[in-house]
Image 1 (cartoon, rainbow, N blue to C red):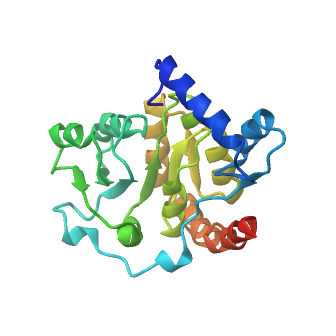
Image 2 (cartoon, helix red, strand yellow; image 1 turned 90 degrees about the vertical axis):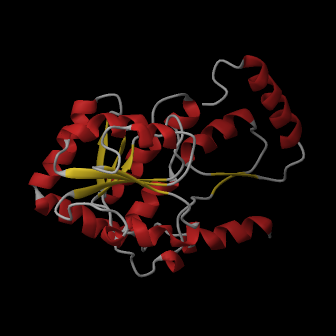
Length: 248
């Protein structure tokens, strides 16, 4: 997305890719959609998909978030973790939170949009930010979430075909997901029934989905249980052997 409308930079990186790929024994990528594109482009190469799932070893005792931020514990936590960058749904979340009185919004991460978060009128009231959390500790915070948010925006093919790590981190922490209705994201959420997909441009649809889950605890608990079951499959240990085998 950072290269949109920058044709000369795009051409430069295409040239780097075409030259470098000739020296590669194989290609490793992160999902099936991208693998198909690469396979069409470089038909003689071995295309390998390795999913970037979290390790089961990262599941540790939770940190109670209420001890760190001054919030009403009766409110539901809408959680976003990861880079605070354009196209990740940060501004969408800031737009919808005023209409969700039942919730507060918690960001875990760093990035150039933190100034926008901190300038919001609800910051330190119903919007909070915790920075500088080591990757090895992130799931200890994640498990506090009621819903994990991943509203990737369609800023280009890279984003449209993305499969954010945070979706599986939410899953490992037992936190149902609200995510963009894009091909790779939808495939996993629907297959394992771990949350809802939404149109990231339809703010009212996102608000309605969140309110509906709050009003229907049985549906929510089913998603939560499915998350805990899915993490026994969607983990790095399931990919590690395949990853090592590539180098053999």
